[in-house]
Image 1 (cartoon, rainbow over the protein chains, first blue to last red):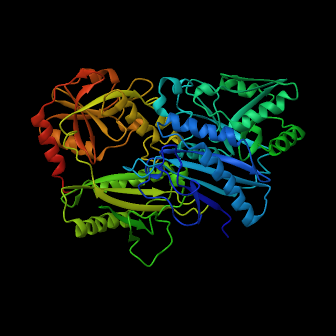
Image 2 (cartoon, rainbow over the protein chains, first blue to last red):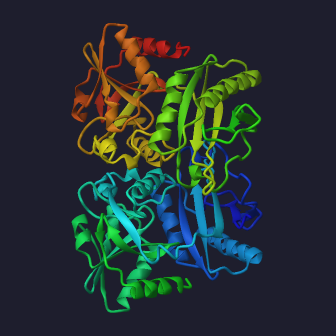
Image 3 (tube, helix red, strand yellow):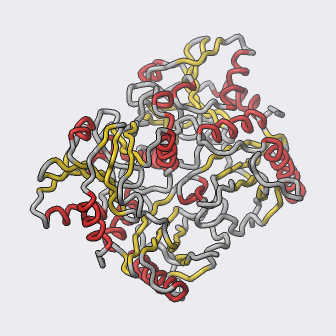
Length: 297
Length: 297
């Protein structure tokens, strides 16, 4: 049974030609809609966002829309029409709820590509579906650190490498997850070639030492996490100091606690990193995930 | 007017389920055929080859098919069914010729993806069309060198970065070409973070010093070029010594001549690298391209 909802954007970019519709149209999610010469598929040339929708509320919608624009800028693509995308996400949630009722957790995936080669016309869509069950990963995950290949400062020295853009060119991220599975782990923390802890393939890293919580600074070509920002709010409300830093990977082993956090999975406490066990405060993990899932914006 | 021919593969992989057809079916090239949740578009998770077809002859077909298999292996994807792909390319050329007659130069793009997320069923197609006119680039191109971000040995230390696989995750290659255009150049030579000359975003580098011709060694995470191999044959037949080496980027400036070579453009002599002019032997460039275009296999 197909449970997905699909909206095709007729005006994804501020440069899109006028249309007589709302800027998007509902379409059959199972039918093919992408041209074989769309640069999104031939070159991974586009960007995306994945938004968690809990009890009908899209979480961190505005930060996600802002990040869409940031990716477009890094990729020299036309600016997404934020108003159209916002309305498409909300209409998609409505359509999904009409069909399936209000579900506890679904996700909305927003994709914009450079369009069919030679046309210069961007394509875009919003796809909504029930996500996986993340109950297990919210209790604990095993992680390995893997070389990201790039220096920590490469986004500044070599912007054409598109570090910090959420591009569709994610094959290496997927390969890293397969490497983790081969090593008996669930996920990955990337380390720069010069030894700094960076991020996971689809997550940010949170590091706690005593009453101090840190995450790697985003000038290292890593994505500014929408969920990471909410995790910082959670800790700050408990009087814990938070900061963005350049964090040598060797300091990971000295942490009191580590998490990977992302939009759909929320917070996953790390039980083991590169073979070293970490104590997980189960009550804190539950409290943190409850907080993250309770966000209504 | 659409001039393209499209064949959708019904059995792209050796693991594909049996079908009653030849393993491929002709389809309308302009119609959408890719699902919005195909990992080829959502994650750039697949690989490709581009083959030049000159006067109806697909060039270096077997090396291209072999490289498809190599990419599949590096990406832990099912092996492409070489026999189906070969027949699809030949059938595509026939179909294109029936429609448009025998053309001097067309290209065939072969794409195989990991398929729609969750299905585990690879998708694939062969797309054929008239290429751009490369007359100008075969006379000379301006090139800039750009940091590739990775060390030269990263394919060996960190195989999950998929260096050496011809993946659909090509967004950074496209961004590098935009950076070249901003600098008034036509193309790029990537340099490793530790200073070795690597390859272009879609080409190999050929370096001549006197009667010696070299190209960067493929253990540096670069593609073994099918056209580069033919260029070596051309020079060897003229008594010139050829070799694969680790070549420090600073040696580029000391070359007598430089080319970028690739399947569809064939050989482009470099007239200027990073602002330094290079003499182009126009007669040699013409002879080399005539040789490359005369290949019937």
